[in-house]
Image (cartoon, rainbow, N blue to C red; front, side):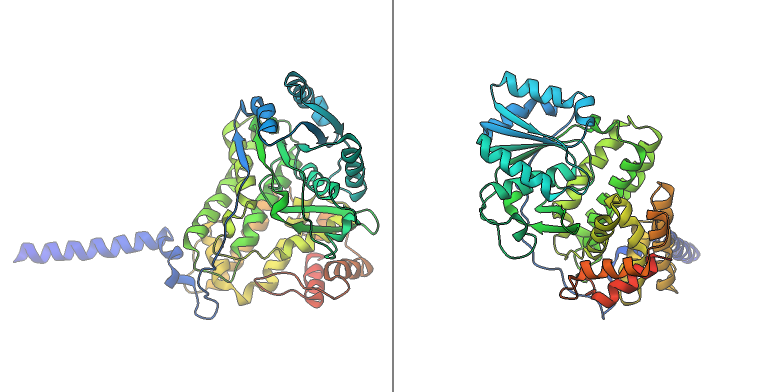
Amino acid sequence: MKGSKKSLSLRKEFNISWTLFLLSQNFFVSLPQNIKTVKNYIDMKDFNFYAPTRVVFGKNSEEQLSQLIRQYGGTKVLVHYGGGSARKSGLLDKVEAMLNDAKIDFVELGGVVPNPLLSKVREGIELCRKEGVDFILAVGGGSVIDSSKAIGYGVGYDGDLWDFWDGKAVPQSCLPIGVMLTIPAAGSEMSSSCVVTNDEGMLKRGFNSDLCRCKFAIMNPERTYTLPPYQTAAGATDIMMHTMERYFSKYEDATLTDAISEALLRTVKDAVFEVLKNPEDYRNRAAIMWASSLSHNDLTECGTEKDFASHRLEHELSGLFGVTHGAGLAAVWGSWARFVLDRHISRFAQFAVNVMGVANDFTDPRATALRGIEATERFFHAIGMPISIPELIGRKATDAEIAELVRKCSRDGKITVGALEVIDADAMSQIYRLANQ
Protein backbone atom coordinates (compact mmCIF):
# COMPACT_ATOMS: atom_id res chain seq x y z
CA MET A 1 0.00 0.00 0.00
CA LYS A 2 2.82 2.39 0.91
CA GLY A 3 4.54 1.55 -2.35
CA SER A 4 1.36 2.29 -4.29
CA LYS A 5 0.96 5.67 -2.59
CA LYS A 6 4.59 6.51 -3.32
CA SER A 7 4.19 5.47 -6.95
CA LEU A 8 1.08 7.60 -7.28
CA SER A 9 2.87 10.56 -5.71
CA LEU A 10 5.80 10.18 -8.12
CA ARG A 11 3.43 10.03 -11.09
CA LYS A 12 1.73 13.22 -9.91
CA GLU A 13 5.09 14.94 -9.49
CA PHE A 14 6.16 13.76 -12.93
CA ASN A 15 2.94 14.98 -14.56
CA ILE A 16 3.24 18.38 -12.90
CA SER A 17 6.94 18.67 -13.84
CA TRP A 18 6.27 17.57 -17.42
CA THR A 19 3.46 20.08 -17.78
CA LEU A 20 5.66 22.87 -16.44
CA PHE A 21 8.40 21.82 -18.84
CA LEU A 22 6.02 21.93 -21.81
CA LEU A 23 4.78 25.33 -20.73
CA SER A 24 8.35 26.58 -20.44
CA GLN A 25 9.02 25.38 -23.97
CA ASN A 26 5.86 27.10 -25.27
CA PHE A 27 4.65 23.67 -26.38
CA PHE A 28 1.00 24.61 -26.26
CA VAL A 29 1.25 27.78 -28.32
CA SER A 30 0.44 26.10 -31.59
CA LEU A 31 -2.70 24.40 -30.29
CA PRO A 32 -5.85 26.19 -31.46
CA GLN A 33 -7.48 26.42 -28.04
CA ASN A 34 -4.48 28.22 -26.56
CA ILE A 35 -4.40 31.52 -28.42
CA LYS A 36 -7.13 31.55 -31.04
CA THR A 37 -10.24 33.51 -30.21
CA VAL A 38 -13.82 32.82 -31.21
CA LYS A 39 -14.14 36.35 -32.59
CA ASN A 40 -11.43 36.03 -35.25
CA TYR A 41 -11.47 32.28 -35.89
CA ILE A 42 -12.39 31.29 -39.46
CA ASP A 43 -12.01 27.82 -40.97
CA MET A 44 -9.29 27.01 -43.48
CA LYS A 45 -10.00 28.56 -46.88
CA ASP A 46 -10.56 26.34 -49.93
CA PHE A 47 -7.63 26.61 -52.35
CA ASN A 48 -6.37 25.65 -55.79
CA PHE A 49 -2.58 25.26 -55.74
CA TYR A 50 -0.80 25.57 -59.10
CA ALA A 51 3.00 25.61 -59.38
CA PRO A 52 4.04 24.49 -62.88
CA THR A 53 7.62 25.82 -62.86
CA ARG A 54 10.35 23.18 -63.17
CA VAL A 55 13.09 23.86 -60.62
CA VAL A 56 16.63 22.71 -61.43
CA PHE A 57 18.67 23.31 -58.29
CA GLY A 58 22.34 22.88 -57.37
CA LYS A 59 25.95 23.46 -58.29
CA ASN A 60 25.69 21.83 -61.72
CA SER A 61 22.20 23.04 -62.59
CA GLU A 62 23.36 25.53 -65.22
CA GLU A 63 24.57 22.75 -67.51
CA GLN A 64 20.95 21.89 -68.36
CA LEU A 65 20.14 25.32 -69.83
CA SER A 66 20.14 24.49 -73.54
CA GLN A 67 18.25 21.26 -73.04
CA LEU A 68 15.54 23.06 -71.07
CA ILE A 69 15.15 25.83 -73.63
CA ARG A 70 14.68 23.27 -76.40
CA GLN A 71 12.27 21.28 -74.23
CA TYR A 72 10.00 24.30 -73.97
CA GLY A 73 10.14 25.16 -77.65
CA GLY A 74 12.78 27.88 -77.74
CA THR A 75 14.50 28.44 -81.10
CA LYS A 76 15.25 32.19 -80.90
CA VAL A 77 15.98 33.49 -77.42
CA LEU A 78 16.03 36.93 -75.86
CA VAL A 79 18.68 36.89 -73.12
CA HIS A 80 17.50 39.59 -70.72
CA TYR A 81 19.68 40.84 -67.88
CA GLY A 82 20.46 43.79 -65.63
CA GLY A 83 23.74 45.61 -65.13
CA GLY A 84 27.38 44.74 -65.53
CA SER A 85 27.56 42.13 -62.77
CA ALA A 86 26.15 39.39 -64.99
CA ARG A 87 29.00 40.02 -67.42
CA LYS A 88 31.71 40.55 -64.80
CA SER A 89 30.81 37.32 -63.02
CA GLY A 90 31.28 35.33 -66.21
CA LEU A 91 27.70 34.08 -66.16
CA LEU A 92 26.68 35.79 -69.40
CA ASP A 93 29.76 34.44 -71.15
CA LYS A 94 28.79 30.95 -70.01
CA VAL A 95 25.19 31.39 -71.17
CA GLU A 96 26.34 32.62 -74.58
CA ALA A 97 28.76 29.71 -74.94
CA MET A 98 26.10 27.14 -74.06
CA LEU A 99 23.59 28.62 -76.49
CA ASN A 100 26.20 28.78 -79.26
CA ASP A 101 27.27 25.19 -78.64
CA ALA A 102 23.63 24.09 -78.86
CA LYS A 103 23.16 26.20 -82.03
CA ILE A 104 20.32 28.16 -80.42
CA ASP A 105 20.01 31.67 -81.88
CA PHE A 106 19.75 34.54 -79.41
CA VAL A 107 19.73 38.29 -79.00
CA GLU A 108 20.48 40.21 -75.84
CA LEU A 109 18.99 43.13 -73.94
CA GLY A 110 20.58 44.40 -70.75
CA GLY A 111 20.04 47.47 -68.63
CA VAL A 112 17.21 46.36 -66.35
CA VAL A 113 17.24 48.43 -63.16
CA PRO A 114 15.79 47.68 -59.72
CA ASN A 115 12.06 48.45 -59.86
CA PRO A 116 12.06 47.66 -63.63
CA LEU A 117 10.83 50.37 -65.96
CA LEU A 118 8.10 50.17 -68.57
CA SER A 119 10.34 51.95 -71.08
CA LYS A 120 12.83 49.05 -70.99
CA VAL A 121 9.95 46.59 -71.34
CA ARG A 122 8.75 48.38 -74.48
CA GLU A 123 12.29 48.27 -75.85
CA GLY A 124 12.31 44.52 -75.28
CA ILE A 125 8.93 44.04 -76.98
CA GLU A 126 10.14 45.88 -80.06
CA LEU A 127 13.33 43.80 -80.18
CA CYS A 128 11.44 40.51 -79.81
CA ARG A 129 9.04 41.39 -82.61
CA LYS A 130 11.85 42.49 -84.91
CA GLU A 131 14.00 39.40 -84.27
CA GLY A 132 11.23 36.79 -84.13
CA VAL A 133 12.01 35.79 -80.54
CA ASP A 134 9.99 32.83 -79.25
CA PHE A 135 11.57 32.37 -75.80
CA ILE A 136 12.87 34.73 -73.10
CA LEU A 137 15.72 33.82 -70.74
CA ALA A 138 15.93 36.04 -67.64
CA VAL A 139 19.44 36.10 -66.15
CA GLY A 140 19.22 37.85 -62.80
CA GLY A 141 16.77 38.47 -59.98
CA GLY A 142 13.20 39.64 -59.58
CA SER A 143 13.54 42.86 -61.56
CA VAL A 144 14.92 41.06 -64.60
CA ILE A 145 12.31 38.31 -64.31
CA ASP A 146 9.43 40.78 -64.01
CA SER A 147 10.75 42.79 -66.96
CA SER A 148 10.89 39.53 -68.94
CA LYS A 149 7.31 38.66 -67.98
CA ALA A 150 6.09 42.08 -69.07
CA ILE A 151 7.89 41.71 -72.40
CA GLY A 152 6.32 38.28 -72.78
CA TYR A 153 2.86 39.79 -72.28
CA GLY A 154 3.48 42.62 -74.69
CA VAL A 155 4.80 40.80 -77.74
CA GLY A 156 1.36 39.49 -78.68
CA TYR A 157 -0.66 42.52 -77.55
CA ASP A 158 -1.51 45.36 -79.93
CA GLY A 159 -2.76 47.85 -77.31
CA ASP A 160 -0.96 49.87 -74.67
CA LEU A 161 0.92 47.43 -72.46
CA TRP A 162 0.08 49.44 -69.32
CA ASP A 163 -3.55 48.43 -69.86
CA PHE A 164 -2.80 45.22 -67.92
CA TRP A 165 -1.59 47.08 -64.83
CA ASP A 166 -4.31 49.71 -65.18
CA GLY A 167 -7.05 47.07 -65.14
CA LYS A 168 -8.25 47.90 -68.66
CA ALA A 169 -7.30 44.58 -70.28
CA VAL A 170 -6.31 41.00 -69.44
CA PRO A 171 -3.45 39.31 -71.33
CA GLN A 172 -4.32 36.36 -73.51
CA SER A 173 -0.78 35.11 -74.11
CA CYS A 174 2.79 35.32 -72.88
CA LEU A 175 6.03 34.15 -74.45
CA PRO A 176 7.58 31.22 -72.56
CA ILE A 177 10.13 32.34 -69.98
CA GLY A 178 13.03 30.59 -68.31
CA VAL A 179 15.15 31.88 -65.45
CA MET A 180 18.77 31.65 -64.41
CA LEU A 181 18.43 33.05 -60.90
CA THR A 182 21.22 35.11 -59.36
CA ILE A 183 19.38 37.08 -56.65
CA PRO A 184 17.03 35.25 -54.26
CA ALA A 185 14.45 37.74 -53.04
CA ALA A 186 11.37 38.44 -55.14
CA GLY A 187 10.39 34.82 -55.74
CA SER A 188 9.25 35.81 -59.22
CA GLU A 189 10.86 32.68 -60.63
CA MET A 190 7.88 30.64 -59.39
CA SER A 191 5.17 33.26 -58.90
CA SER A 192 2.35 34.58 -61.07
CA SER A 193 3.31 38.14 -60.17
CA CYS A 194 4.83 40.82 -62.39
CA VAL A 195 5.67 44.24 -60.96
CA VAL A 196 6.84 47.12 -63.16
CA THR A 197 7.12 50.88 -62.86
CA ASN A 198 5.64 53.25 -65.41
CA ASP A 199 8.21 55.98 -66.10
CA GLU A 200 5.37 58.46 -66.59
CA GLY A 201 4.47 59.38 -63.03
CA MET A 202 6.69 56.65 -61.56
CA LEU A 203 3.68 54.43 -60.86
CA LYS A 204 4.72 51.04 -59.53
CA ARG A 205 2.08 48.37 -60.05
CA GLY A 206 1.74 44.61 -59.75
CA PHE A 207 -0.29 42.28 -61.93
CA ASN A 208 -0.93 38.55 -61.53
CA SER A 209 -1.65 35.90 -64.15
CA ASP A 210 -0.68 32.24 -64.44
CA LEU A 211 0.26 32.92 -68.07
CA CYS A 212 3.57 34.43 -66.97
CA ARG A 213 4.69 31.60 -64.71
CA CYS A 214 8.17 30.58 -65.74
CA LYS A 215 8.70 27.27 -67.52
CA PHE A 216 11.87 26.56 -65.58
CA ALA A 217 14.13 28.13 -62.97
CA ILE A 218 17.82 27.23 -62.76
CA MET A 219 19.17 27.92 -59.27
CA ASN A 220 22.85 27.64 -58.38
CA PRO A 221 23.42 29.02 -54.86
CA GLU A 222 27.08 29.64 -55.71
CA ARG A 223 25.91 32.51 -57.94
CA THR A 224 24.80 34.39 -54.83
CA TYR A 225 28.21 34.39 -53.11
CA THR A 226 29.13 37.84 -54.45
CA LEU A 227 25.91 39.60 -53.45
CA PRO A 228 26.62 42.69 -51.31
CA PRO A 229 25.52 42.40 -47.65
CA TYR A 230 22.78 45.03 -48.04
CA GLN A 231 21.30 43.24 -51.04
CA THR A 232 21.50 39.92 -49.22
CA ALA A 233 19.67 41.37 -46.20
CA ALA A 234 17.05 43.15 -48.32
CA GLY A 235 16.46 39.93 -50.24
CA ALA A 236 15.98 37.93 -47.05
CA THR A 237 13.50 40.55 -45.83
CA ASP A 238 11.51 40.33 -49.05
CA ILE A 239 11.46 36.52 -48.82
CA MET A 240 10.16 36.63 -45.26
CA MET A 241 7.58 39.26 -46.08
CA HIS A 242 6.12 37.17 -48.90
CA THR A 243 5.28 34.51 -46.33
CA MET A 244 4.30 36.96 -43.58
CA GLU A 245 1.83 38.65 -45.95
CA ARG A 246 0.08 35.27 -46.20
CA TYR A 247 0.59 34.18 -42.61
CA PHE A 248 -1.30 37.14 -41.16
CA SER A 249 -4.69 36.00 -42.35
CA LYS A 250 -8.16 35.78 -40.87
CA TYR A 251 -8.21 32.11 -41.91
CA GLU A 252 -6.59 30.56 -38.84
CA ASP A 253 -7.26 26.85 -39.31
CA ALA A 254 -4.47 26.15 -41.83
CA THR A 255 -2.36 24.30 -39.27
CA LEU A 256 0.00 22.59 -41.72
CA THR A 257 0.46 25.72 -43.82
CA ASP A 258 1.19 27.66 -40.63
CA ALA A 259 3.88 25.12 -39.71
CA ILE A 260 5.46 25.38 -43.17
CA SER A 261 5.39 29.17 -42.99
CA GLU A 262 6.88 29.30 -39.51
CA ALA A 263 9.68 26.90 -40.46
CA LEU A 264 10.49 28.92 -43.58
CA LEU A 265 10.61 32.16 -41.62
CA ARG A 266 12.83 30.73 -38.88
CA THR A 267 15.15 29.20 -41.48
CA VAL A 268 15.65 32.46 -43.39
CA LYS A 269 16.00 34.42 -40.15
CA ASP A 270 18.82 32.14 -39.01
CA ALA A 271 20.46 31.66 -42.41
CA VAL A 272 20.84 35.35 -43.24
CA PHE A 273 23.11 35.90 -40.23
CA GLU A 274 25.30 33.00 -41.36
CA VAL A 275 25.74 34.23 -44.93
CA LEU A 276 26.43 37.77 -43.76
CA LYS A 277 29.30 36.32 -41.72
CA ASN A 278 30.42 33.92 -44.43
CA PRO A 279 29.18 34.84 -47.94
CA GLU A 280 30.33 31.49 -49.35
CA ASP A 281 28.30 29.39 -46.92
CA TYR A 282 26.68 27.09 -49.49
CA ARG A 283 24.28 25.42 -47.09
CA ASN A 284 22.68 28.65 -45.92
CA ARG A 285 22.84 30.34 -49.33
CA ALA A 286 20.94 27.33 -50.67
CA ALA A 287 18.35 27.58 -47.90
CA ILE A 288 17.72 31.24 -48.69
CA MET A 289 17.52 30.61 -52.43
CA TRP A 290 15.01 27.78 -52.06
CA ALA A 291 13.00 29.78 -49.52
CA SER A 292 12.74 32.60 -52.06
CA SER A 293 10.80 30.32 -54.40
CA LEU A 294 8.67 28.59 -51.77
CA SER A 295 7.71 31.88 -50.17
CA HIS A 296 6.07 33.26 -53.31
CA ASN A 297 4.84 30.23 -55.26
CA ASP A 298 1.59 30.27 -53.20
CA LEU A 299 2.52 27.25 -51.06
CA THR A 300 2.32 29.35 -47.90
CA GLU A 301 -1.07 30.65 -49.01
CA CYS A 302 -2.78 27.23 -49.12
CA GLY A 303 -5.81 27.56 -46.86
CA THR A 304 -5.09 31.20 -46.01
CA GLU A 305 -5.47 34.49 -47.86
CA LYS A 306 -2.73 36.88 -48.89
CA ASP A 307 -2.91 40.35 -47.40
CA PHE A 308 -0.09 42.26 -49.16
CA ALA A 309 -1.04 45.60 -47.66
CA SER A 310 2.58 46.15 -46.66
CA HIS A 311 3.69 45.39 -50.21
CA ARG A 312 1.21 47.84 -51.69
CA LEU A 313 2.25 50.52 -49.21
CA GLU A 314 5.90 49.87 -50.01
CA HIS A 315 5.43 49.99 -53.79
CA GLU A 316 4.69 53.68 -53.46
CA LEU A 317 7.79 54.22 -51.31
CA SER A 318 10.09 52.63 -53.88
CA GLY A 319 8.21 54.35 -56.71
CA LEU A 320 8.58 57.81 -55.15
CA PHE A 321 11.98 57.49 -53.49
CA GLY A 322 13.70 54.77 -55.55
CA VAL A 323 14.54 52.69 -52.48
CA THR A 324 15.28 48.96 -52.36
CA HIS A 325 12.04 46.99 -52.10
CA GLY A 326 13.07 44.76 -49.17
CA ALA A 327 14.30 47.77 -47.19
CA GLY A 328 11.03 49.57 -47.85
CA LEU A 329 9.08 46.59 -46.55
CA ALA A 330 11.09 46.56 -43.33
CA ALA A 331 10.47 50.30 -42.93
CA VAL A 332 6.68 50.05 -43.13
CA TRP A 333 5.80 46.61 -41.72
CA GLY A 334 6.05 47.46 -38.01
CA SER A 335 3.68 50.41 -38.42
CA TRP A 336 1.16 48.29 -40.32
CA ALA A 337 1.44 45.58 -37.64
CA ARG A 338 0.77 48.01 -34.78
CA PHE A 339 -2.15 49.52 -36.70
CA VAL A 340 -3.96 46.16 -37.01
CA LEU A 341 -2.63 44.44 -33.86
CA ASP A 342 -5.52 44.95 -31.43
CA ARG A 343 -8.01 43.19 -33.69
CA HIS A 344 -5.75 40.19 -34.35
CA ILE A 345 -3.85 39.65 -31.11
CA SER A 346 -3.88 35.85 -31.21
CA ARG A 347 -2.31 35.72 -34.66
CA PHE A 348 0.47 38.09 -33.72
CA ALA A 349 1.06 36.21 -30.45
CA GLN A 350 1.43 32.94 -32.37
CA PHE A 351 3.95 34.62 -34.71
CA ALA A 352 5.83 36.09 -31.76
CA VAL A 353 6.31 32.72 -30.07
CA ASN A 354 6.63 30.32 -33.00
CA VAL A 355 8.74 32.51 -35.29
CA MET A 356 10.50 35.17 -33.23
CA GLY A 357 11.11 33.03 -30.15
CA VAL A 358 9.31 35.34 -27.71
CA ALA A 359 8.34 33.80 -24.36
CA ASN A 360 4.58 33.34 -24.23
CA ASP A 361 2.93 35.43 -21.52
CA PHE A 362 -0.28 33.47 -21.01
CA THR A 363 -1.68 36.24 -18.81
CA ASP A 364 -1.20 38.97 -21.42
CA PRO A 365 -1.35 37.82 -25.07
CA ARG A 366 -1.23 41.41 -26.32
CA ALA A 367 2.10 41.95 -24.59
CA THR A 368 3.39 38.76 -26.23
CA ALA A 369 2.16 39.96 -29.61
CA LEU A 370 3.74 43.38 -29.21
CA ARG A 371 7.07 41.86 -28.16
CA GLY A 372 6.94 39.83 -31.38
CA ILE A 373 6.64 43.00 -33.46
CA GLU A 374 9.50 44.56 -31.51
CA ALA A 375 11.62 41.42 -31.96
CA THR A 376 11.00 41.54 -35.71
CA GLU A 377 12.16 45.15 -35.84
CA ARG A 378 15.28 44.27 -33.83
CA PHE A 379 15.96 41.51 -36.35
CA PHE A 380 15.63 43.97 -39.25
CA HIS A 381 18.04 46.35 -37.52
CA ALA A 382 20.47 43.51 -36.82
CA ILE A 383 20.77 42.71 -40.55
CA GLY A 384 21.05 46.38 -41.54
CA MET A 385 17.46 47.11 -42.56
CA PRO A 386 15.54 50.30 -41.65
CA ILE A 387 12.36 50.20 -39.58
CA SER A 388 11.00 53.66 -40.42
CA ILE A 389 10.74 56.03 -43.36
CA PRO A 390 13.38 58.42 -41.92
CA GLU A 391 15.81 55.51 -41.62
CA LEU A 392 14.91 54.45 -45.17
CA ILE A 393 15.38 57.79 -46.97
CA GLY A 394 17.58 59.67 -44.50
CA ARG A 395 14.92 62.20 -43.46
CA LYS A 396 11.25 62.48 -42.62
CA ALA A 397 8.83 62.47 -45.53
CA THR A 398 7.03 65.78 -45.97
CA ASP A 399 3.28 66.13 -45.59
CA ALA A 400 3.04 66.58 -49.33
CA GLU A 401 5.00 63.37 -49.92
CA ILE A 402 2.78 61.45 -47.49
CA ALA A 403 -0.27 62.75 -49.34
CA GLU A 404 1.24 61.65 -52.65
CA LEU A 405 2.00 58.18 -51.30
CA VAL A 406 -1.61 57.84 -50.17
CA ARG A 407 -2.97 59.21 -53.44
CA LYS A 408 -1.01 56.71 -55.52
CA CYS A 409 -1.61 53.74 -53.23
CA SER A 410 -5.36 54.39 -53.11
CA ARG A 411 -5.50 55.46 -56.77
CA ASP A 412 -7.08 58.75 -55.82
CA GLY A 413 -9.22 57.11 -53.15
CA LYS A 414 -10.79 54.61 -55.55
CA ILE A 415 -9.32 51.40 -54.12
CA THR A 416 -8.39 49.80 -50.81
CA VAL A 417 -5.61 47.31 -50.02
CA GLY A 418 -5.25 44.40 -47.64
CA ALA A 419 -7.29 41.35 -46.69
CA LEU A 420 -6.62 40.79 -42.99
CA GLU A 421 -8.02 44.29 -42.68
CA VAL A 422 -9.21 46.58 -45.44
CA ILE A 423 -6.89 49.58 -45.57
CA ASP A 424 -8.51 52.66 -47.10
CA ALA A 425 -6.93 56.03 -47.85
CA ASP A 426 -7.37 57.27 -44.28
CA ALA A 427 -5.76 54.13 -42.84
CA MET A 428 -2.93 54.37 -45.37
CA SER A 429 -2.23 57.90 -44.17
CA GLN A 430 -2.17 56.77 -40.54
CA ILE A 431 0.25 53.92 -41.29
CA TYR A 432 2.58 56.09 -43.36
CA ARG A 433 2.60 58.69 -40.58
CA LEU A 434 3.35 56.04 -37.94
CA ALA A 435 6.26 54.88 -40.12
CA ASN A 436 7.45 58.47 -40.51
CA GLN A 437 8.15 58.97 -36.80
